[in-house]
Image (cartoon, rainbow, N blue to C red; front, top):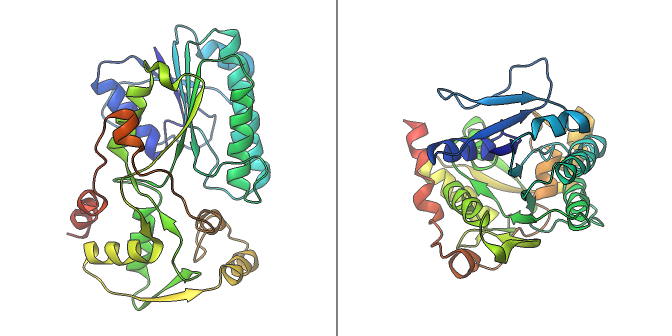
Length: 299
């Protein structure tokens, strides 16, 4: 059986559907909440409600489990305390429980540029979580991702929404020259499945991304083209956007750019272009071709 944490997110929901479609037995770990979790609809699910801080509950959730996909993250938050609780301490508890339960494979999704000494909260939390795994005795694989996109994603889709809401102009952090490397969700799912039995990935950290580099400005232009709209792109100081967020006290939702996005766009998000074909034998999907889901959304 496969246990998935973070199954309510964009990547998690896509992974669960993919696993079930391939006949795998899947259990989803859901954090206790007063809100109804956003789970894939129309399919029967084995759901366990348990906090990542409850190590004994995690061990119970791992009964009959062989493989763990650890996707749970507070990465959309810029709050260090929340990131520490979920990404760092949550990973520590999960790793401790998995070690005691003798889990055979543990696959963790991180981010390109993750570093425990990073000045950016998300990348620091991911780096600390990676260190916990590396120091463990688990047969882990850490996949460091670039920008993952697909229907209902939290990046390209939100950019499209922001462009549609702002009818005349669009504030662009900096000059828009930060480089991104979009990775199609289906390519990521294929990599995840290939990673499970591949001994080359055992106790390794691997960065994966799409087959093309784009500046953020270019991505904004491509998305506008797909939506059939045109906006004036205005370079704007990231420092002033951060100050505006602080003034509004709305760092996660509703601000012109959430602080977590400003962190994400502060540096290039790239890795080697040939990782997918050389390591996994996959030809990466073309960004503009797969972005056609935005064209369907505008109709």
